[in-house]
Length: 112
Length: 117
Image 1: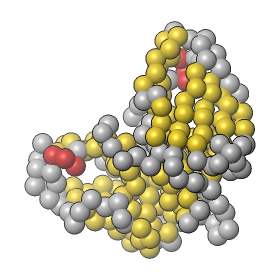
Image 2: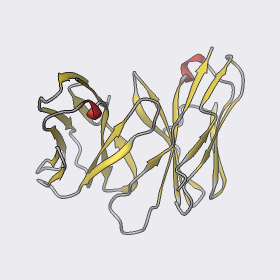
Image 3: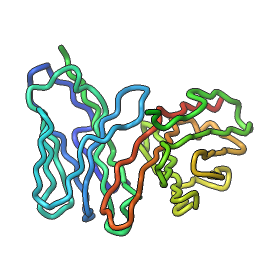
């Protein structure tokens, strides 16, 4: 059983469309991170959200941390082929800043 | 700057053989993590070290798996004997963990793709 469930698992959309990926848990986290992983490489950190209700923007990507610190979303505006990859949310527990729990992942494909 | 270095990048072995994966963390980082990634189970933490000391090995599947960190610049993950179900991509990651910080950024290596026949 995954502690962090992501939805959808797979998403294939046309270039220029908008999309939202969700990360949900029944557990409370001190912070939540989003990573992106490209084929043949390790995950790379995109952002960390720390405060409940926090919204962070990274160009066309908008990240939100739920008020209850149990969930998060990633919204991409005007998706581009370069956004293709595996998106992973990761929860940081209050008990350990080092040990993070990764979500099940969303595999995103943007068609030109 | 060199990132996390892993070797080999690909390993194909037969069931029952010993496999050793190697990792060199980023210089100055004091925490090192070993993960396993499969389609079925996603990215799982196997073990992590802080200042070369194993802190949490609750993710290590069974006694066939062992990890060592003899110094700050080198770690190994050993599987003996290997089984087909161990086939996966194994990632090493490192971070700088400072006391009082509520989160850290982990930097991942490129991974070792292990296939056990």
